[in-house]
Image (cartoon, rainbow, N blue to C red; front, top):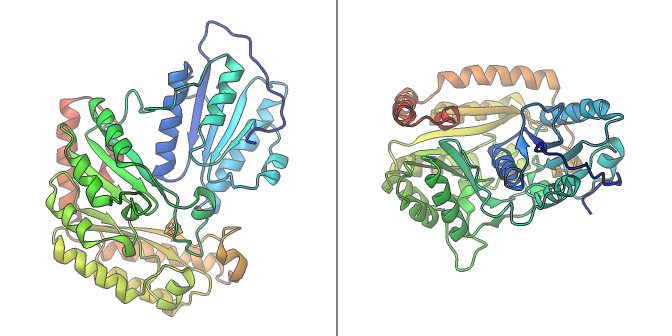
Length: 408
Ligand code: SF4
């Protein structure tokens, strides 16, 4: 089902290990998926190479949340295809959010791709690569924790999303929410810590809805309590949160467990209630601000970051000004601002007219990014400095990489 129509080529087995290169774009979930796939390749007997042009197996792990990310992946795919003429021994696989349930058009545009795999569908990639090079993928994915993980590493705990915001393609590409068992997650965290990891970020599109689909039910608070017990682990983080799923119990656990960072990324996306309803975010600006007040009451030292979309379909200047009001009143430590990006297949693409001029959107984004800097929380420098002190202490003690990721 996943393979292209290209015939399977078996490469003569040589004494040299076959090489692989996993190229990644997009969110931390993709970074984490790529680490797992890379670990599967290494377990099978492939060796990593930084040389994408000459790797025996190239995997592009893609993102389609914004047009620019998709264009980068298709541009690279086109260049790889040109180089492949007359050299059919190399294998190319495309994984991630670019690969939806319908792949006919992709297969027509890129006939030289051997495997199309949806997010986390590692098996068809490893099986095809194994078949080519006479290596057995059996068992190579279980416990696929990198041999030398970064000091700050990610663990996906819930895949997919049930929210279906009208602008977002994620639920159509990553599917409905599917929580991993807490047993598996804790086991993976223990293995990572045994390999030197000090700082773990628990990942999910809606990380705070973790566990609602598990029986018996557990939640993010229960999971953080279990992970907190692991000796040698120093920091626990989690992202991304949805305002409607951030419970009082989760907030109390963040406050009470010393290893859990008092830091929450809570996207608000827009400040105007009509725009929020059109985005189908499930809250009003007043409800969002009430949630912020509750967070600050329970965790007075909290560091808050957020995501904001500029120029969603139909947004006027006056409506956008309400987003700036939220920035002014909350004083986030960091604001991830993005221009609204029309995505084929979303509810907005089917039912709404994208009537905001691109140049205006770009200009407003630039202006809002520079003004959001003025409303930054005053604690940012302090918390960043504390984090840097902690990380440089750990890095001095043991020579690990991954510091940049941990600072953010
Ligand atoms: S909550 Fe909304 S924006 Fe976030 S992944 Fe789900 S659908 Fe997309």
